[in-house]
Image (cartoon, rainbow, N blue to C red; front, side, top):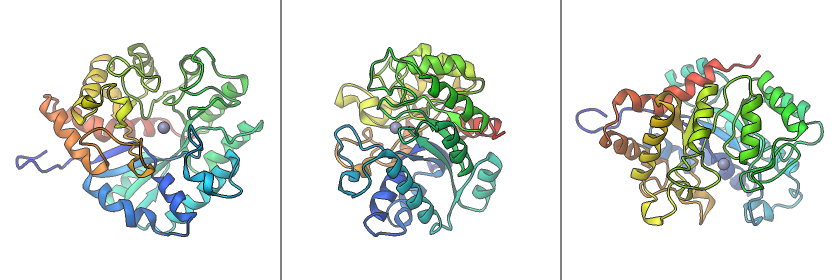
Length: 336
Ligand SMILES: [Zn+2]
């Protein structure tokens, strides 16, 4: 923030579901989706780069657009369709660079482009040959990966499942393969059993790209203080999530100010170096997907940093949370 209160900082959003909107609209025949519906808001929000997730789950009650798409009734087909839509869309975006490394990200930023790392959000689509599938995802540029969304699959169980279940033996082999191929393990949707199994076996950093603190909002998608410390101990980061239900149980307190308190709690428990952004904006998915008050869409991001400022957080700490911590991690965890 400069003296006139103009937002100068730019932000790396470690979890974005924009490819959901891209896929939904492209399957209906639209093109240039990001440019027509999202680019202006991204610029207003100061988003310099993001992680674009492939989330192809059909949702808890099969309520997503996929139910209206013929021949897309298996996760594998949905993922394939989504990837085709994404790459067709990227080809229409001269202002966007899909990147794999921090150097590529910085080069894109210097050229005035928004950059994007790719993430797979849930591996329900992977069959018994999941390890080979990891090789193929890595070859397509995927740099972050979650074993599950909220479902139980052949690798692990998601946050909505029995917390006692852990990783399967295939799940463990997949984590090893991810680390070998430079795909960062992301525990944001894992259940507690899977979380601790993954932490116990990981050789490098583990992240939770879009989860808040259970101490302030006790839902399974958020992390306990013990889990936050475990992520810190791997050298990982935790990304702050705007989704209303992960900010506070009381609707009146689902606000940007309350999310700033999650940030402060994370700083207290882990140290500022491990706090990042993974906003998870998905207002474009329809009712039930609202962000916290003041963070209805990504154009509210500068307001969130004003909340951190008002809490007394230094500009240096804000910059680390805004972009540096996540980028630093991606640059230290490279494909081998
Ligand atoms: Zn998610």
